[in-house]
Amino acid sequence: MRDLDKVMTAAEAAEKWGKAPITIQQACMGYKGAPPRFTEDECRKAGRIWLVTYAGMVRIYGEPK
Image (cartoon, rainbow, N blue to C red; front, side, top):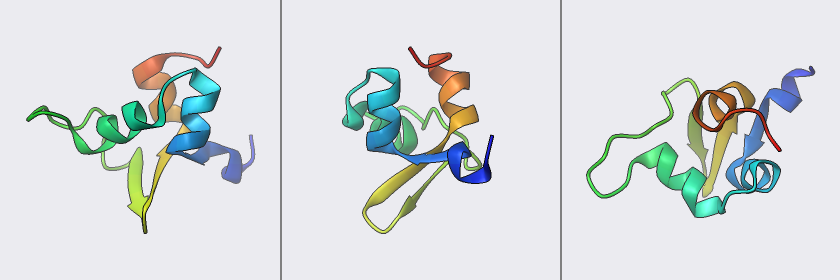
């Protein structure tokens, strides 16, 4: 897998895993007082866009459908 394929936007990840983009974003930043589900090495915000790693998505949501 190429390095570029290991990182994707929250929108790309949501499409690939069949989730809503807001679900991925909330997993990055935490929701309703819950801690973030992703580690600092698995997601970060770049401007207004959340970036997540493929490995982080697999850890939380399993393999893509």
